Structures are given as structure tokens and as C-alpha cells.
Picture 1: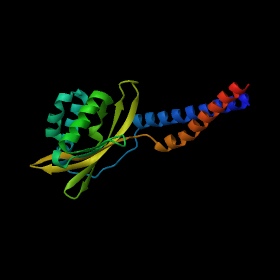
Picture 2: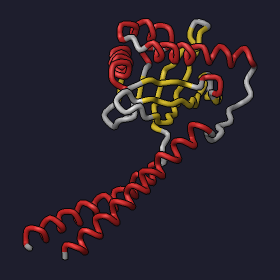
Picture 3: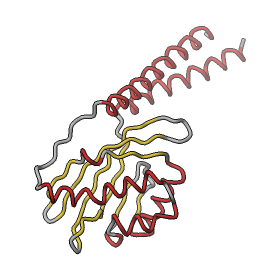
Picture 4: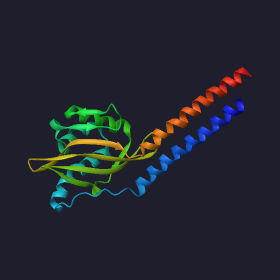
Length: 201
């Protein structure tokens, strides 16, 4: 019994490791050769004006100074209309205070974010612009890089384009993460049965 359960544990562990490697490999490919997102052709002056707050946001993320959160919001966002969805399910932020919590939390704990603002895809959405922006996050504690995608809405106010909506998404194939639960659970059950068989021997 213990040979069977031990063998099953090793098998499911290897399957889990393969799936995790596959997730990492796809993430690596997305960083080096990302899937193209084609935006609309916009006049160059409009495109440059629309990219201004995104480039400034990237600059603030490079500095990672929590004391600069209010300045970042003033230069890049419409605080009264601001809605932000983070990468975690409980990261839902509203208004100036929500944006400040997100920025300060990211700059203290999240890691080094680098955005590829020049490749931003822009789409007209009525009087606003919808954007899709790629980047990568290097996590401080493991030096692991994760491709990220940011989408949002830009609105014009007093001649300046500002961010009013943001959504951060880890740009990984979540299908593999869902599938990885099966061998992870099977490996855990096999390990428990292996432990029981050792105690019964």
C-alpha cells in the first residue's frame, strides 16, 4: 500500500511541477514576445496627450515613494471618478483615498512595476478613450517576473487626459492554474494515505 501511495504522490507531484513550469514558460513568452493588441489609429497629437498620464504613472511606479501618492493622483487621475480593480479579489478601490491606498500599498509591498507605455493600445469610447497597457512586475521577495496587463479609461478634463478607471490583471494563463488544482489535491491525498500506511505498518 505504501509503495502505491508513495508512487502516486511522486507522480502527481511531477504533474503539478510540469504544470507550474508550463505557467512560468507561458509567462516568460508573454514577456519576450507578447501577443499583439492593436488599437485604433489616432492622430499623433491625441495619442501623445492620452499617453501622458500613463507615462507619468509609470514614472511614479519606478520611484516607489509612498509620500508621492497624492502628487501622482493629482497629475494622472480624476480622483472623484476613480475606480480601481487590483490583481487580488479584495482589491476594489474608490475615489482618491482608495487610489492612495492602492498606490502606497503597491509601492511598499508589491514589487517593481515596469510599463511599456509606448505600445499602449487606445480605443475611442464615446468622448473617452479605453486603453490596454502591458508591463511586468518583479516581485521583491522572490525576484520573479510576472507579465501584467492594465486596462482602463482616460477622460479629458480642462484640456488634459486623466485616468478614471484602472484594472490590473496578472497576464498568466489561468486555465493551467485551474487544472493544477487536480494534481495538487491528488498529491495531497496520496501523501496522507502514504502517511497512514506508514503508521499502520
